[in-house]
Image (cartoon, rainbow, N blue to C red; front, top):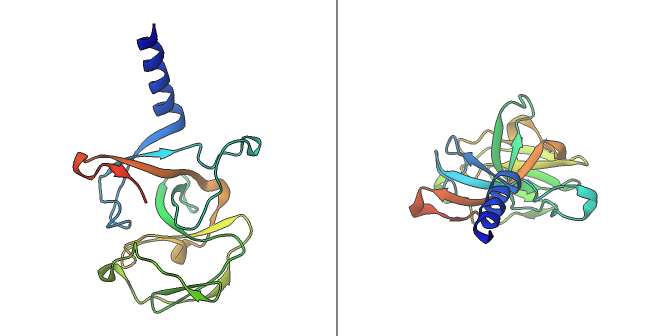
Length: 167
């Protein structure tokens, strides 16, 4: 009896609360590699009356529908929140008048792109890949509307030697 309940609970958690996804591309190197398999938490940002679910915070790695083709999903890091003032000067991100410290972007993955100052619109998030030289992100397609974000990267499960919590 308890074995059956444990299996049912495990299936529920894996199929309903979490969703397995495969990373396609290298825009999130070094954290996530091409073909990594991970679970995303589909309820991390749920609305259910505000009773469950977290707020999206700067630094979260989120999965969202690509704004120009919602049949495709992207995975990127949240850099700026609604209402934040953001600019990029030769690869250096300025957020609300201060340089953003980004230890997750190795020197070899930095770029020298610039972007004029903008205020992230209400209900939108500015996202970027950690591998800045090859990432297609909010610098290209603009801020991502909240309703297109459907999960937070939670745990890499394959390959086994890289299994662990996504940060």
